[in-house]
View 1 (cartoon, rainbow, N blue to C red):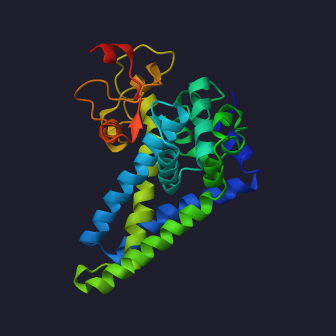
View 2 (view 1 turned 90 degrees about the vertical axis):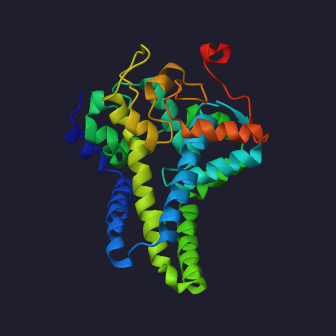
Length: 290
């Protein structure tokens, strides 16, 4: 088994790895911009709105819809989910789905590029993003999604989607300042709170599903991996932290299977079902019978 230093050395051979590393460092450093921009009520509202909408793009869109087909929806809604996922800056939809399906296929083996069991906590949490392995997913396990040109469009123009939302946040901040200067907002402030801080929070919430939820927590079900349910991650990752449940029932649209296991993504999906925007929400047999 290669140790972490050998893997990091190998990772540096691909130019894209440098670019990702620089972006990740800059994004974290950008959070300190709050020192210069301050905070306002609109900034906090934007932070919460961006966290929830982009987070649901990943949890409901990328994960439960595209990766596992846990429910059905229209193509316009599928596009909207995937677009929100792109805005979370966790990679394009085809890349994300391919990596996640590989994770389920290879969980806790050397082929699982973000397993704390084989690669250690730091590599499983964030280090894998700056390795060659992160760029080498063939995508063959996501070919079912290639029949949607709109998803290929999002994958191809992922970077522009990220940049456009930064510009939109800046314009919104300037407009709010012109509308009511007493709010104390600005374009730079909304970029710091709505993009830098929000994206950093979302990244680590998602990454903890890979790292924390394979190390600490409790297990309701016996599985062939080390997946756990973690209350903290369950809350901040909008229901994704009930990871042992998910590994036991990967096709389930609901991850928080007990009444007290808060699963905000499931709640939103149920709300969308009531208005006819999604359907056929899959559940484990014992949940359907209950």
